[in-house]
Length: 332
Image (cartoon, rainbow, N blue to C red; front, top):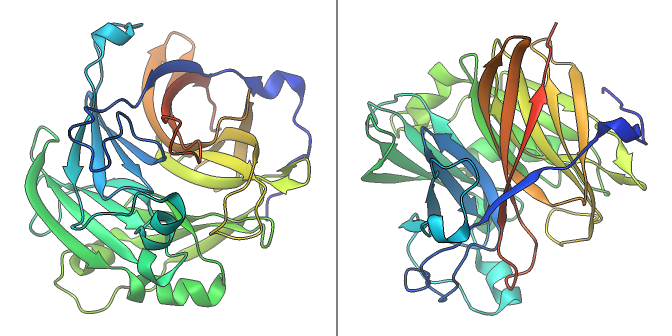
């Protein structure tokens, strides 16, 4: 465990900039919504931003505008790519019970059947119906090819469930030849965990060439402190450089992985290549940030990182937002 102070210093509070709402053409949305309302995972591929939403069966695709501060009129609505067949109920409670809970999106390197790489959407594993993954093949420009394959995550999650009774996978990304999964804790069990799989061993299983997934290479537990007695827990992660990685985290007042609760705090942070927590910056206004992507910006004083974030307001009547902030980081 790597405990952090319970109350962050005032200078550790940062205010992310609003970029856009995740607007859609309502004629594309199965329930006629003009936006995504539960953004849960984010991947940047060149100037294209891919978003999974935990109450949808589709992937949202948003083109980044070249203007630094575009107006609403400049921004084209996002498009949807279907990941799973079917239609989710309109009623929020029934939809919550039926949804595959796609909380995680990762960009993968080349693997069998996807020579230019792929996106991998993962169900959280918090319920039996939430153990489905989807591979989305990409071309060399990072555009979906139309090739998709379902992945039964039950055999991958079963050993993890023995260790975490309330399993909740909320982040995934590639780092130094490993696929990392992030388990999110809660008030009932505050342990968050980073679970590593050797990419060379898990890639054939994801591609359907091996019947069984490999065992986890390592499991690292980490505590991020709390906000008003509510533990901060990981919601997504993204690789940086040299083995370092960044994460988003929220303090959601709920005792388990199923029920929603009030978001009383949120943060972004950096884990150094040695696995130690080096930076933790709380976000003003406590937006419920559930997706993060990073871009390096080289300056004369070293590397800065621009972090793009997406939110899940836990209310289908409220559109998800895209936010952005910048941090200077040191890993030494």
